[in-house]
Length: 505
Image 1 (cartoon, helix red, strand yellow):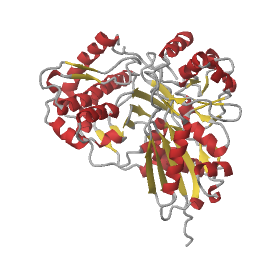
Image 2: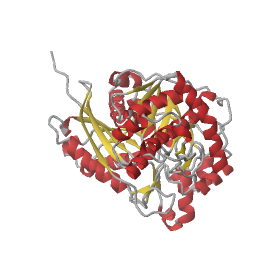
Image 3: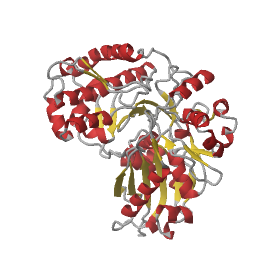
Image 4: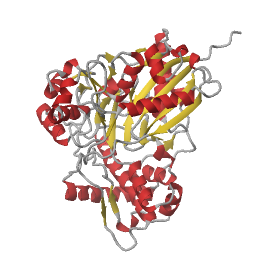
C-alpha cells in the first residue's frame, strides 16, 4: 500500500495586538506547529488615531516562519499552501512601485468619524467610522500630498498576499468591510468609490472568487518570508478578514452555527445563505469567504477593558476572576459603560468609558472587574437583540478568542445572550481558518469538488460541555439592558436599536 504524501498547510493571522501562525498536516488532520508574536500600535499619535506600519507585520511573520519551520518535522519543502487572515478595515496604501506610502490606519481608528458621517450622508446608507472608505477620504483631505502618490489600496491580509505572490487581489469577505463594496451583489460599489475619489476605482485590485487562489509563492515572496527556495510554488489562498477566517476555523461554514469571538474587539456572527442588510447599520452585512454571507455584530471594546482593570489595580486574571465571582450580580448598582475606544455598536466613535453608581467600596478591584465583564456582556446582548430582530437565529453559540478562556465570562455571556455557549478547543480560530482555507483551495485546484464545510468540519473540536444559561442570570441581564441603554442615551445620545426586518436578497 502506497503511503500518502505528507503535505503541510500554513495559516497566518495578522491581528491588532500580534500575529499568530499555525501549521497543519493535511493528511493526518493535526496541528503540527504553532507560534505567536506580540506588537503594539504606533505611539504618540493624536487622540482617536490607531495605526501600525505594515513593516511591523512583516517582521512578526518572518519571526513566526523561522520558529515554525525550525521545529522537527516541519519541513518547508512539504509546504503545499498558505492562507492569510488579517484584521479587517485597515487601509494599506501603496505607490506606483508597490511601496507603502504611510502607516495603515486600523479598524479601531476613530479619527475619521467626520468623513464617515459625510460619506454616509452622500451614499444614503450607514458607514461605520472604522471602515476603510472613511480612512481614504481622510487621507485625501488631511494628507493630500501622500494621497496623490497612492496607486493601490489594499487591506492588511491583501498586502501580505501581495508580498508573497507579487499579485494584488481582494476577495469578497474582507472587501465587504471597506464601505466601498456591495455585499448583496458581491462587487465593488462604483458610486461609493467615486464618492471618495474619481481615481479610486483604478486603485482597488481584482476580486478572487471564494475557494480560488490569490497566486503562488514567488522567489521574492519566499525570501521576504525567510523561507528556502524549496517552498517556492506553494499555493497562496485568497485569505480573508479575521472574522471570515474565524468562521472557517470555528465551523461556521454551515447555516445554524453562531460564533462569538472575544479579543480586543468582540464579534458575533453566523453564516447565512442570503444577504441580510440592517437598515440601521448595526449589523454588518458582510460576505463570508466561502461564497455565502456573514451577518456580524462588532463591538470595539472587549478584552481590552478587562486588561485596563488588571493593569490599573494589579493581580493576574485568575485572581481577579476569583474575586469577581464573590461579587453579587449587578455589582451593587455599579454600571460600567465599556466604551474606552469609542464604540461601533452603538455607533459612538467619540464615546468614552463611564462608571455609574459609585458607592463606598465600588472601587474594589474584584467589583470593578465584574462590572467590566458585565458591561461588555450587556453591550453584546444589546447587539444580539438587534440580530434576532433581523431574523438571525442565535440558539447556541461557539466561543473563540483569548477571552473565551475566562470561566466567569463564559457563564455571564450564556446568561446575557440567553443561549448555551460552547468553547472550542482551538481558541485561535482565525489562524486555523486560514490554514483550512489553504487546504480547501489547494484541494479545489486539484479538481476536487469539495465544499469548505467538508474540509473544516473534521477539525472542529470542543472544550468541555456547553455552558447553559441560568434562569436567574437571564433575568438579571434582561433587567440590566434598559438602564444600560438609557445611560448611553443620557451620556452620549445613543438611542436603542429599532426593530427592523431584513431587506431582500
